[in-house]
Length: 84
Image (tube, rainbow, N blue to C red):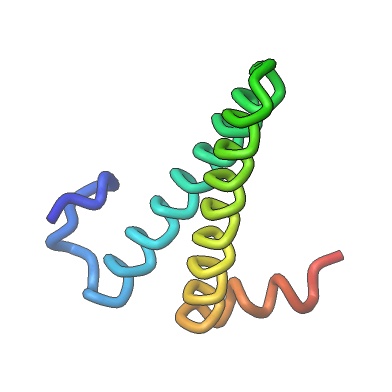
C-alpha cells in the first residue's frame, strides 16, 4: 500500500497509519475548498444546497481524522493544547 512518502517499508505500521491519516486530512481539506469554490460560483439554489451538504460532510471527515491523529500522535495533540 503506497502512502506517497519515501520508502514505506522503512516506516513502522504506526507511522504508516499516521502518514495515511495526514494525507487523507490534506485531501479532505482540499475537498472542502473545492466545494466552497463551487458554492460561491453556482447560481442554482438547489445545487448550492447539495454542495453545502457535501462540503459539510468533508468537514466531518476532517474532524474525525484530526481526532484520530490527536489520539495517535501525542506530539500533535500537545501542539493543539499548548500552541502560541
